[in-house]
Image (tube, rainbow, N blue to C red; front, side):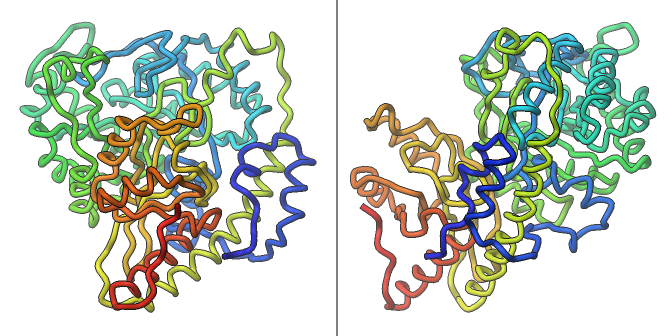
Length: 497
């Protein structure tokens, strides 16, 4: 067991400079290495500076940094069969959903309040709940006002791309370094099955004609952004039977045009959401279907595997949403930005990244010594910070990694319903958790009870808390090495009770 380092909670909870300095002083962290699966040695320095603190553009950064979305852009110029924008909906987590719409002035007040209370905040995004570029006047006013108050915050927007070409120059002038375009197809015939209509040039278009216009403008906008040095992430919703096989071609096209990241998002099609696909019975893909497609795209554009399909008013580290703590009725009427906590937090993260990097290198060395062992999927319960630090019954998602002698690779999150409710578990909930862990060989947690351990084992999933509070890669490597020894007749790792 490694010595206790900065706790995951200490990375997320402290909001004062004094508390964060205390967290550093008790660890003895001395490594100067930079820990990242894609770090400064893997890309040009100017690109690294843009992504190193952006939780959506860097898998490593999402352990440490938070984003917030402000819902200032309600108008939209297309209809998607997978979308049903909802307002005043606090208990639903998916794109297009918000609890309250904001004016630009209200958004600035909220951003300052969040920045003062959430030192992890590094990115302000506008992702609707409509389209941030179609509702451009509100998006632009919000970005300009926030940039004056908090000049170091990264500005990021999401768009369907229909109105994008007319605004690329303004986006570049405002120093927006990151733009996400949702591109679900490069074939208008497929597009007609996804988009019933678009609104363009003061009229409504339908069918293949609508999809053709949308595609042409998406491609033009992508090319214009890349030409100006703006990093583009392409989101694609995976819809089984409609565009799932076709997304291989989408990946090829957006890679050729210079997209920085490609994010394959599973269709959310619960009928209760009221979307067309949900009401007509269109199913979403299973986690292993998403993984299989991602694996096919491994030689293309870099893939984002840590997306949480955030609400349009999300606040916090990816995987958590603190938006309900910062509704307008809870904010002070006047706020003044204090940069001290965010500055101190960045110093803490720089320290923490060094220790994480050293641990990752040691884990890779350990794995290289394991030969002729099959790759396995391992799920981790984590509250953030890159460590195994959450009780099995408290998890609302598990982080799934693939491990082999070649290393540890992040596959993606698996959302689940929390198993423990007031100290009691429900059989139906545990069954759903096991179903969500399809393909997983082991679950590594901070703690787990005897009951769920036995039920997981009956489903072919081992559970262990032997690596509690270790770095994720180190814990997975230790589990894998012990598992391989067991396969060869050596000592097996014991399941925790």
